Length: 367
Image (cartoon, rainbow, N blue to C red; front, top):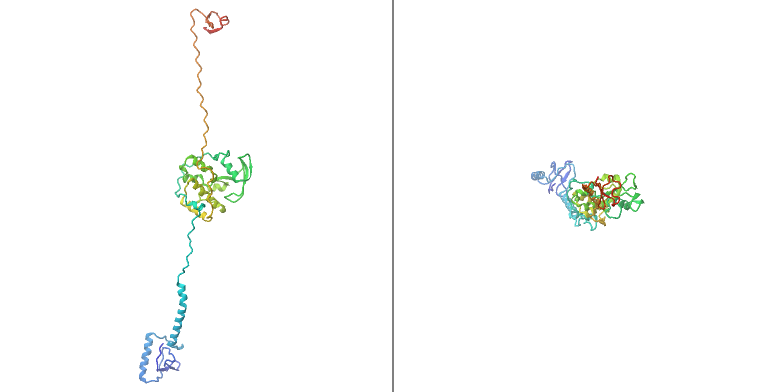
């Protein structure tokens, strides 16, 4: 749109439009009908209109209202003012926040916790199972603490409730309440169906593959009978565990998992067994859910057990002494005597009866 002073023409509806600057003209296909100045200025007006069209200063609209450049300028100024007024908020919105982001770095594990102890375990690969047998860990349920009771009955007395005893050692019946692996109660009866096992928390086969294969016999005997490594548990669940470690098996009872893994960490730390990378990661994952879980104490059981003495073999029997050979009969004298008497005389009796009867008896018969 453009202001042109001193000119007027008729609009499309045949009405006079003043273009002296007091009203606006819509640039379009208008035809001049009356010029208030000299006709010589008409060509100038047409040229200016053409110039406006070519420069794109206006938008043709034959039906819309006529607006002035001043009005548009005012509107632009208002919009600029609004933009300026809004700009502080926009600038404020674009300013990055100075609030420090919340740190996601986990806190270091506290001393004395099972989680902290995991970091002290050596990490290596699993060694071959070659050569493993249960016998490599010594006599089953050996009385390692020398209290007169085998280890199995020691653990049954420790873990069962409402026990019935045959004597100071042997448990006849009792209740495992609750079973740590399932959370249920299990009745134990000696001689009945095997419903309660004594589990090695760190399986002996797992220990063999993570260091125990190179141990002396006394150390293997110790870990097999250490109360730290033993629990009375549900038999069927224990057998599903096999020789699994933390990475491959956890108790179905989720409430016991932190305690279970803490025991494994304690046993492996006490005996210097290593863990695999996957096992370590699994231990950390479980214990992160209970970061204050204390590491169980090592207990009083030594890491080297005194091996049982072999039964003394029976003393070898002395070789039998051969009976002495009988003394050879003295040579018969040539005087025809039939016997030698004890007094050194000879008897010439034809029969043994009565020979040497007066000479102290017969010493030797010659015939």
